[in-house]
Every structure is written in C-alpha cells, then in structure tokens.
Image 1 (cartoon, rainbow, N blue to C red):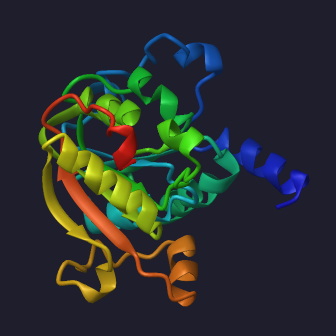
Image 2 (cartoon, one colour; image 1 turned 180 degrees about the horizontal axis):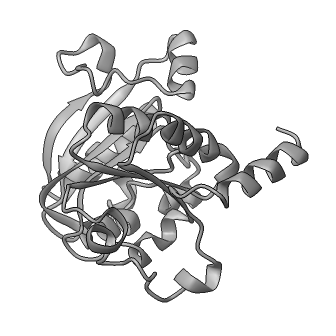
Length: 234
C-alpha cells in the first residue's frame, strides 16, 4: 500500500463514527474515558461485548457482527490503514454493532474494566516464534492475565491460527495452569467443530489454506492467574 493511500485511509477513519483512535497520552498508564462505560455511553445498550484482538482488516469482526446482531463487536489493531476496510464495510452494510479501536494490545486494560467483556477472539496473530519474543504472543501469561481482568466469569477465549507452534504453546500453557479447554483441534476443517462461525475465512486464512496449511483452533476459559511455563516446556 502506498503512503498516499495510507494517509487517505487515516483521514477517512477520522470521519467514521465507528472508529476510535485515542491519543497515546489518553491510554498510557491511565484509563480511557470509556472504560467501564461502553454499554452506557457508546453502545447505549447492554448487549454482550465481544473483542477481536489484532483484527487486521476487520473481516472476522464484521462477519461475526452480521451473524449475531444481538452482540456488540470491537476490532482492535494498531494499524488503522488495515481496519479501515472493516470499518467502511460495517458502515456500508448498516451494522450498528461494530466498532474499531486503534491501539496496541498492550494497552487494552486501559479500555476495558472488570466483567465488561463477554468473549475474545484472536485470529491469526503474529505467532512471535522467536524465544526472545515469547512475551509478545497474544496468548502469553502477560496477555492472558490482562484478559482475565476484563472477562466475565465463564467467558470464552478463541484462538484461530495457522501456527501449530502457537497452538501447541497455548495448549501447553493452559494445561500447565489447569485452565478449562473447551475445544482443541490442530486441523479445524477436518474436525467436527467447524460450524458457520468457525468457517469464516479472513484474507490470510484463505491464503494459508491455499498453501495446504491446516488451521488450528482452541477455545478456553480462564479461571485464575496464569503462570509461565517452565523453560523446558516452552
């Protein structure tokens, strides 16, 4: 994408009512103004709130919102030029239950308070395979404990990825911490779990499938603080 196109998308995002782009100093070591107030002040309803973390172009966020109009969806990504497509599609489709937030995932606890989130989706994140980058994985203890602080009791977290390494790491971490794993498959499309929701395909997923890569999926619930794996198990 050219620099000119990026600038055009950034400018258009500023005009979209479903895009929120806080300044750095609004969220760094402080709570954003909508924390604990999304239902009352933004959505103006009490429908369940679902997040997609690292939403990319926002395809999964928009597709979920189309299927489940009784829920509110927020796609979160730092790359506004990417989720511009999802935000624009949501407006074109007349979907009132979709929003996008431009921020780093590291800052999400500035946006959502205890018991405010009903479900989390993590779709095809960077697996951060280098050992020195393990703490940046969106299913590392650092992030899982953030999610724990905002999810309602019994809420589901979903990881869909082409990375067998990230899938194995996440599954091992959850098992080590005795968390509740609801579904775990290392080949989603050859499993009994592939329903209408899980068969939603993003641009990247379609590419991975065309290359013959199996898609993995794990759904789980967090019931306590997550400790890191012993070094021998990472």
